[in-house]
Length: 243
Image 1: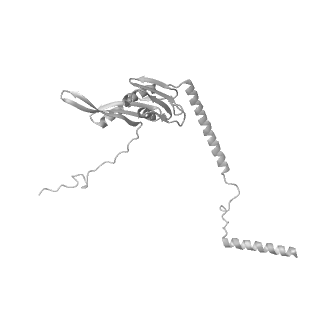
Image 2: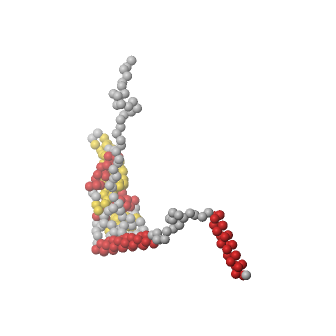
Image 3: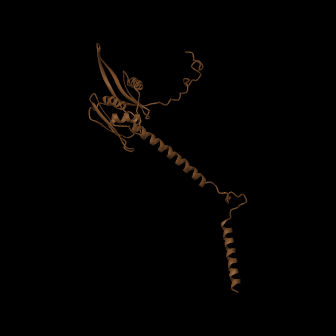
């Protein structure tokens, strides 16, 4: 008969292993979006070698965006390499009133892209690749047109070059300053209105019935008796006056 192993030697618990509590995951600084995933083949002496190529866009929706490419034998490895490459290529996009400061036209490889500022509420009038780059950059209102290729990788690379051409013009700076002043004035008005409403809603100096400790609410029967007594007194007074 084989000797029985002691529970303590196995780790104290016969039910299983002693596992450490799972650590809380840290919030990511950038949002990631896989623009395209391709399976590429590399011909070597021994035959063909299959790998994956990932194109990833990252952004914080607050003016920073980047694009990167990565290759690996596994999809996760390729995506991780692409995200690391995108962090190296981060750029800052000037945004005024949720749109771009001025129109830009660009030709890159086979892509010909044009983007223009739009009024609030317009949204992103753009294709899939252009839309994702602008979304992760934090732009909310833009008109755009892609006349050339539909290759997502090329369009994404062209979009980064388009955004790199954006600059804060004097008109855009003046408009941003005007918006800032309007926001400050609106904030002051809201604070003043809040103070006025607090003054109006303050309790009056005359105590309410509910706040008086000696006050006892009357029942319906007592109200009816008081009403009958008052009516009786009024009738008696009228009879005396008629005499």
